[in-house]
Length: 115
Image (cartoon, rainbow, N blue to C red; front, top):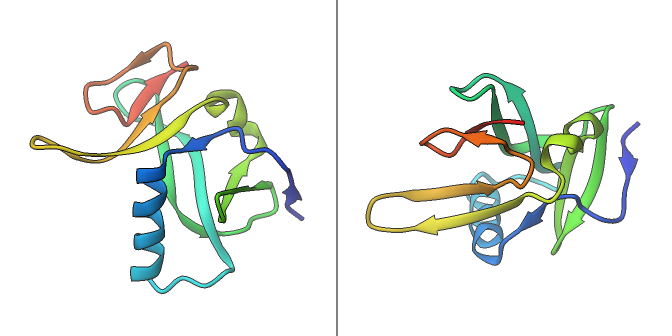
């Protein structure tokens, strides 16, 4: 079963949290779904970020950030600890950004990195 952990290794900015809550409401998701944050192999720099709503899985740790249930596999923590998820809305781009202090290199699109 998933392990409940008190302190989240990832920060979510106020603007990102607002957008995530909006998306959650638009998709009519119930309390069985949490925000999955993780990594997977791929992208132009080696890893790409995972961000989306999902149900709890066996390997997950569960965190809470400002009332948002956050799900993350423990093994992903080494790549994500200290990261901040933010939301930007500008003239040229709009979307989530990942400010990851563990990334040694990132790509131009900002969704892939190497560690």
